[in-house]
Length: 212
Ligand SMILES: C[S@@+](CC[C@H](N)C(=O)[O-])C[C@H]1O[C@@H](n2cnc3c(N)ncnc32)[C@H](O)[C@@H]1O
Image (spheres, rainbow, N blue to C red):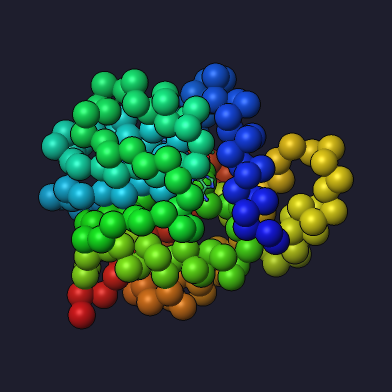
């Protein structure tokens, strides 16, 4: 999978759909607020990967009104919506690629939702290592995202992506929960858990950077 091409497909896909995005994702709100519920009391510095229009930040700022959030996304059109949110003053917005941008360091939590189910395992491992490096010791990575229920489905989605002749605008390539778990452990995380959220084919992954 060519990561640069994948990113460009993604950027264009969301730029063309940002107008109706919030309506389409209204039914996903429980998968987004589940992240806030999983954060410990006192969480203050947060990095949001693939923040889009910032829907997950409504519940986050309701619980942590003084949080300092850094939000990164490839798509300027999606981020323009985020910049209009009532909490935008508390958000540092980066328009860039989370595989290559300077993510910063020392976060209490790195969060992501609906944004990481498009990448080959080797690229995901690289990203999970970047997330690990961006967290403070003891910090948490929390990802609420699509999964598939078997290795066969995982392989089928990747072949569909490879064989797409351009007729399908967007093909998801989620991994199985076991595969996600393996990659998180390989990146150095500990205490990795995966819990159901209020949507089929979604899980809430929670992984901790060890304290020492
Ligand atoms: C389905 S949207 C999710 C937005 C938001 N997190 C939510 O749940 O409503 C996925 C977002 O991930 C962003 N994205 C995908 N790949 C990215 C990358 N490599 N770097 C930064 N953002 C990326 C897309 O531009 C898009 O805005």
